[in-house]
Image (cartoon, rainbow, N blue to C red):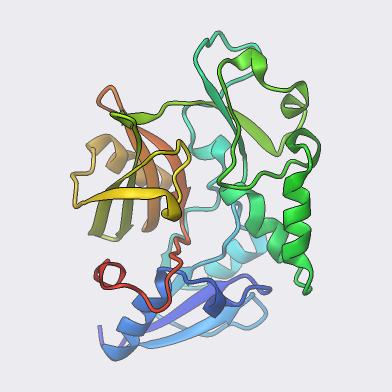
Length: 270
């Protein structure tokens, strides 16, 4: 372990230190253990290393980045080129689907499509641009704030413009409930190390600020482990719910983050 050299590949427009990624404290721990860690912003410079950590915060990894990864003997998440909803979700609906339950509209891209828009506009006004786009009708802009995905009581209530925008998808809304609370399960992993939790909140779309209670270290369903192997994830975070005893994957993220500086003791334990 002490002799390893680890290279971390990010997008060329990304400032890795500014995001609060879960990978950041891991890199610090590896440095303290004697590993050499180098950060590569973009693919212009090749740095030999024992392991390349693919950490490009895009839903679909560009082909030139994938070709760059193939120059390394071992790539973490090298097989995870696409984490779009059309790739990972088993509950997408077409306009004429024979489904009569509630539905939710999401962006096909991860996290509301914000990373793509953020990295495409590296100038100082990009945060304002993102907020303006998310205030426009989603059927026109294809943009949604990740904590405001609209939920409709039935398929027929979805605005027609949504169906015409390839940036958006319509999915069955399958919540996990406990009393008046909604539940979200989170599985973070790297190789055979993992951490799980179940989060309860009063809102159907759960973010950190909504949390009422957490339960730690729950078992991971075998069906979800099989899905991880199918999607070829070495490292990442799966958000899912349990519905009638079956895991339903909501989101697969290869660049998980947290919003605390410095990290809390619980986050450092993860």
